Length: 616
Image: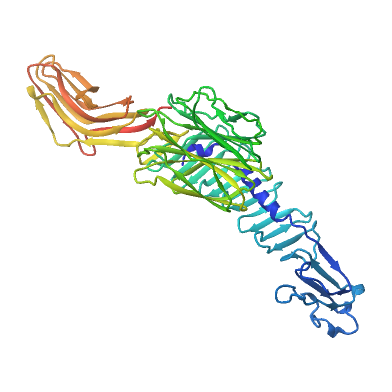
């Protein structure tokens, strides 16, 4: 989990609109519910699904034995015309003037409860039509307040509290202000959002917990460093109708490190043949891809990058040679720098546009060339056509940054999204994404995968972060000295006391290196004897002085006892492997000396290094 998941994006409205479009299509069949009186007969299969008869004893004619419900007044079904009864008649005679009624519906395989309910009143509609089977609930005003089919379920209305469950959005709860308040999904985990700002106050996923301030947006997170050792990119998205020749990707805040990497994706489509078109990248950006196709549906995509990113990135405007595109979606992504080597574009895998006519799209995505352990992969997928996706099957290890769609509720829709993962040795170089569409229709799909080398990383293990920067991480290494008395006399100095070997430290992080001596005794047996306890560091070229813990100048036959401790911060300028040691040395010689460094009960001589995270 990363704080980028907390970026306020309008996925709630997107998913609701997508689901509403599918529901609207399902309930749009023409229906006629009729209430008849008298004799119901000769009703043909093409116009009748189920007929019901209501006959009370006082409503029957003089010969009650003619009725199937003799002795059991109430609502009963008569004959259903289907395969078994094809060509037969339904005939029931009753006294309509006395209050008996018959109800029929002209929509095959559909039931409306209560029988014969008006379309604008409270009722339940059960529809078994192939490909559109559902149960819908309506309130007194004829407004749909509940819906259930094979792809989604919801309860409530857009003007009041609403609960929705579907494959792409998971479980989502909205308040009466049209704000999503709770999300439960495989991609986003559990999120609880503030109703005013829309900021996720609490997010829980398999790899950690995030808590955010709903006013400032600042976050504190506890995450698994082994899973989240690469902070998630920052992300933002925007859409537009009839964008003309300027197709923008939104501004997105950087991590404020000097070598962040800025990626901008843009896609555009039209439900017509636009011929050849191409993109010109935004000023200051390098174009990585420019792919387009024409036909019954035209789809164009492009990726441009900037390295390093500006401290305050602005909107990136792509220019297209065609002004006839009707849909545009843009994404901005920032990959954090701050490591020993700056992140950079390694390779881009940009497949040709593919056209699918199936309800389930199985899209093969290849990893870019020369992908290596630790590389960050960012994938962009764009779809254009008359249908909307209602479910995704994303390969294990990929996490969604966000999705966006333009043209929902129309016969031409453009949707796109961005995903990311850290590639490790042994991971597949080719993976399949399955996308379930509402209907089988001609859909164009384009996928781009970017390989980014040297993304910012930090050591594994439990990690606490503020605004996606690591907070104190705890001890990296230690060396504990013996509590037995050790004496050094006369020319025996310098002496090495404790040693820590081969500690990995990373650029951009702060480390605390410290030493503690519970008990020391300096016996200067001659004038001008001077002694010191130092911490020395070896970064690969031998040990040199790093920090002096204590230095003493002794008088003739002087004796000094006490304790000493000290520490110093270390911020490496590059990723390093270092070793540390403590040394007792003589600064100025006298005629003799005796030195003791020891621990005592409940105390110890201790050299240690702590990782205290990144500087803020």
